[in-house]
Length: 367
Image (cartoon, rainbow, N blue to C red; front, side, top):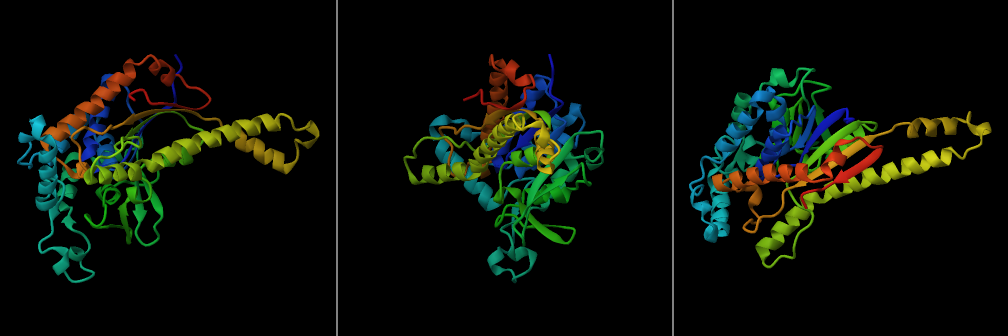
């Protein structure tokens, strides 16, 4: 059976929800699906670096170490297993994370930024992310990550003063812990990261989905793209204010996903229409510069299959789900990602997804 030239893992941002992506990766390893390119934003960049920055046999181990660490300090980790109290306990769990921080990830600034002089580091963010820097340095082999024969990693950030989206790519230059930190520095919680004298924030501010970077960077790629989204564009009508805020967050952080896939399909349809039009041009005009330019443009053929995996809303989730790090929730998210991959790969259409086809085809088999 023919195969795509590349397997790309596209990881959205979403804080604590990133445990779902770790479960997806475990499911991929079960099926023997190994990415040669990972692109991520925010927590997707962290998970991506843990994958690209470790040998295949240690990747799952490192992902578990990270998610066990960040869910280790929550005093409600075991209590949250009792379903009748789950929603309320999740809110308390998120409150604990916001008040006391998350082990190996972030801690509250003391004194609070309100009492720090303007322009000082303490005045620019609510939390200190030094714990995350230490965690990443311990769990990621950056020499391995930057080896050209290994998995390519691209992480998205935004330039603070220009507002432009920027991608740091191991294909073009070395990736350091600063690049991963920058991709996840969501203000006002986390401080900007300085790289080359410039400051960067979380790439999700501009676009929480790195799919556009893959499509723009490699217009003629043959790839199976596994896109893992942590917020669902589709959802039910809310019943209370907390659900209103949660629904708004889902829409906000999933909007670019819909835009990117729709844009990619529209461009592919235009390319095919242009091919048909050029076939109708008389031979006498084939030397025309405009004809040659368009011929070169449509000559780029892509064979892209997007397998879309989406973290669906749990019945007990709340508006604070992206910073709710209880052990029970992290475990449930991980298992949900694993189960979604298993369900997807068991679907009869999965064989079709694995076979390269001209243009772009999209599968969402877990819906």
